Each structure stands twice: as C-alpha cells, then as structure tokens.
Length: 101
Image 1 (spheres, rainbow, N blue to C red):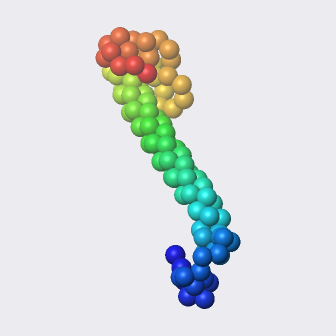
Image 2 (image 1 turned 135 degrees about the vertical axis):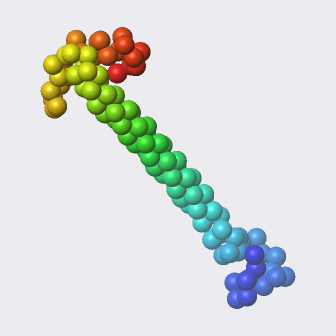
C-alpha cells in the first residue's frame, strides 16, 4: 500500500502513514455503504414480491367473480353485470364449485 510520494518503503517511523490512515477511515464507511445498498436491494425485491402476490390475488378474485356472475345467471339467479354480487349467489357458487373467495 505504499505509493510514490506518500512514504518511502524503508521509513520505519511510528506515525501511521497517510495511505493506512486513508484506508482505516475509508473502509468502515465503504462497508457501511455496501451493507445499506444490500439492505435496500433486498427491501426492493421484497416489495416487488409482495406486489406480484397482490396482483395475482386480485386477478384470481376478478376471474372468479366473473365466473360467479356467469354461473349465477345460468343457475337462475338475478345477477347484474356490475356492482356487488348478492351474498346468496356467492354462497351458492362456493358450495357448487368449492372455490374460496
């Protein structure tokens, strides 16, 4: 770690050379920055994972609500094209298909 102009290779002084002081001052902050970057990356990956799971749940729910409406009409229930599906229709759909909503 001896660089030209900072310290002579044969210098045996007790004073810590500047390049070692630089290393001792730089290394902890470098390690801390790397740890912070790793934690931020892991947190971002966890957020993307949660978002993906949430999207999948929403798609599952929407798909089954559409199927529930169709099933309800075919089974003789009065079901609108929009809005809330009556609880009686949802319960009958659950019993008939075994799907959790």
